[in-house]
Each structure stands twice: as structure tokens, then as C-alpha cells.
Image (tube, rainbow, N blue to C red; front, side, top):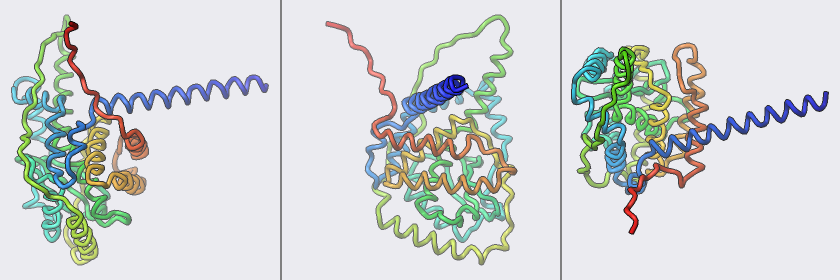
Length: 332
């Protein structure tokens, strides 16, 4: 009996060790492939626009997608058509938008280096009982939306709010939803191919994001002002509680696990760059607590605990980053 118990214990322990080793390998492989470049991590914290521009221009998968989608043929046209049918966000007519907070939102994007990028992105606080941050298509770009219930959630402050905005900006800037639709369209076409696999060669090229950047945008005075304005607006939310409340289910766009992890990685690296990396983890913990209250309303995958586990792995391995491929040189 004791021998059987010992045997089962050893087997179970071995399985746990194998699982942990496999998980760490997956984390390592993901970071080596998708991490932002070292040059982005080393940018001055006073110029966050440089972080975003360098990170996006270095993402070869993203830039290859930009090149391919411009073809507007076959799978590209199918994906673009499906994307155009997604619920779009129109801030000018959406009655749940809290106009009183728009100045705060615009300033936050400016301080985060998002407005200076060559992307059509806006940020809005929406009156809603739901705890959500999401990005949604607009006619010329995308909008980042934060519900008032998350904005005023206990534990949230100006720096944690930046983490939520950075995550959603990564989803929008990397065109995750359109890329998922494109991948699905290509897979459907591939499934229809009879008699073999068609192979083609593509040349990866960096396109789309310009590196021309403005000067300094972020400093400690900005943070003090942001926190002051954040607290002032949280206190004022009760005065506008009669504004129509939004149900956000129409904007519940599903991303792949890798896309959510990539957005987490970009957002965490941004927060590290401005000295607030730990606040990103705290923000995820706040979301985890809130999502437990809404677990029957939305399908949140991957789960918050696994997202926190991944970011803590990134934090605990500061020397890990994107693998740099070095071209071999001919021997003498």
C-alpha cells in the first residue's frame, strides 16, 4: 500500500514538474517572438510616443499583415468586409459617453504618447454598471472605452488606468480583430483546397508606422496632475448618474489567447518604461476581482490568473526579450 502511494506521488510530482517546465518554455518562446525590441525598452520615459512607434514598426508579423491586407483580394477582401460589419463606436452620438471627462481622456492619451502616433485613436469614459475596458472600430480607426464602473472601481487610480488604456491600445494598434478575421478567412480558403497545399513566397516588409516623433510628453508633474484630475472626476460621477447607461455586450470582441497575451506584454512593457510596471499587475488583479462578479455575463479567456502569471514571469526574467537573428557571415 505504501509503495503504491509512493509510486503515485512520484508520478504526480513528475507530471507537475513537466507541466511547469512546459509552461515556462511556452512563456519563453512567446517572449522571444513577440516582445518589444530592446530599443523601445530603452527609450526615454519622457517620450512614450517613441516606445509605441518603435514597438509597432519592429513587429514583423504585424507589418507583414499590413502588406498583405492591402492586396484587398480573396481572403483580404473577405476579412475587410467582415470587419466593416462589426459594431462601430460613434462617440458623437453615443449618449453614454461622459463628455465632462473628455478633456481628461484626451490629455491622458497625449501624456501616454498615443495621440502623437499616426493612428486614429480616441479614449472615452462610458456610463455603465459593467466593469469593462474594450476597444471598438470607428470609421477611421478605433476607440478605447472605459466604463464608469471600472473608472471609479476601488483601487483604480490614474496609473492603473494607463495600464488598461495601454492594453486596449495594443489590441487596436496591432489590428488584432481584423487579423483574426483574416486568419479565419485564409483557413476557410485553405480548407477548400483539394489535391495539395499551395505554397507561395512572401517578403516581409516594415510598413505603416512612421518614426517621426514629437518631443517630451511625460514627466512627474504630468502624473501628479493626472491623479488630481482623476480623483476629481471620480468624485463628480454621482452628478451624472442619470446619463443613459451602456450595455457593452455588442462590443464583446473575442481575441485569441496569443493576442491577449501580446497586448498584455506590450502594455506591461509600456508601463515598465514609465516606471509603473507593478501597477499593471495590480490593475489585472483588480479586474480579476471584478470579473468574478460578472463571470456569468461574459466569457473572459484566458483567465486573469493566467495573465497575471505570465506577466509576473516577464517581470521575474528581466534579461529575457525578443530573439535577435544574426545573419551568418562566410568563413575566411
